[in-house]
Length: 229
Image (tube, rainbow, N blue to C red):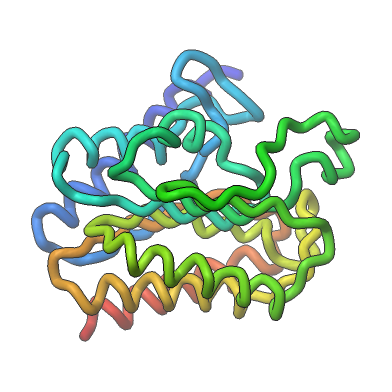
């Protein structure tokens, strides 16, 4: 499509600009709604993602702050394979990815690649079945949260994918907005307790406009309250 490469490049530039504003001390957090194209590889597009903006930002952080630990938290209903493939062996980065098992999506006919559940020093993956609701999701999230606290990252990249909510056109979870907002609050609390920490939030997926607005507006409200303290 004409202009798609320009648009994708603008997304990457916007994400990097948001990070630069944090470096300038204007805020501890930033939110970029149209972003989080976590499937793209370094040499090829993948699953409608042209450029992998989260991977670009993570690479920038690792290059500019080589002695700092980073946490990548991805709750988009789809596995962030482009990010995981790129950084799974870097001890400075913890990847936390909670997603629906790629083999269970109605449109993939079971052909999606899926690494499955994993608990490692810097990679924590959960491939969940369709139908997961608030209670089960939050129980799992709190386990990951404790691991993130122990890892003690100075920078957090959070993909706040609203496609993990009930009624999404592509995902099949049964979660309410409270789950997404609970994860956002917990991560914001980690940022607030340490003035040296920074967090960039990317909107990522969400294919039901009736809930996309409330989902992201709730995340923005959480971040705004943090920045006003």
